[in-house]
Image (cartoon, one colour):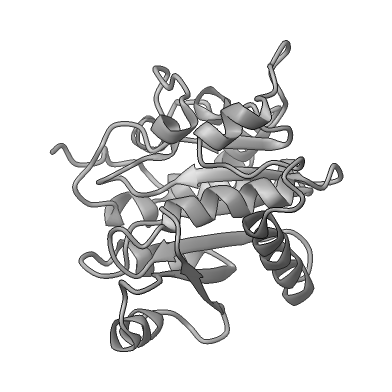
Length: 250
């Protein structure tokens, strides 16, 4: 596996120029974008507004409401599973979708599981232009080039891109901070959801927590024990830790 390319630090003026360039028009819906039908969304394991009587839709609406009540303004939320198979990507995708249900808000889902990315495949999106890894490795890359329409109104995706064994160097880079800063400055109505790798096994989740405002831990119901959940939760600052979501899905 190749390592991330080194990127020099920027002075204040260069940082402002890069932030302005990368944030401009980044979350704008592409002309002619087609909304997915309810059956297509179900095929992608994604909730939709029409499924008002389904308990999973109500559950994600409730999660969204609790987050909005606990946080001031827009935020960057890290969603991480306790272990592989706990369903962290499922929760991250649908929590971001629930946020986009509100027409006054938008959501950006970022696949940060560089070892085992899944969001682009699940959403059936052609990401031939690259993703997060390509943006972070290329100091001249445009953020808008790696933001994709999902077919869900108000929801965009940055896929992981080329797989990498470890993400710590990427997530601690200035380019990652620039990405989030660009979105915050140019799109004040946008909520960012980082789909992180499992807590157990690598330090990546802990590093991502440093750049997030709030952390949501996903435990597989009947899969993760109370002890492993407690061990995973101990990795995060209490002030950022929103709680545990028990997931019975995928």
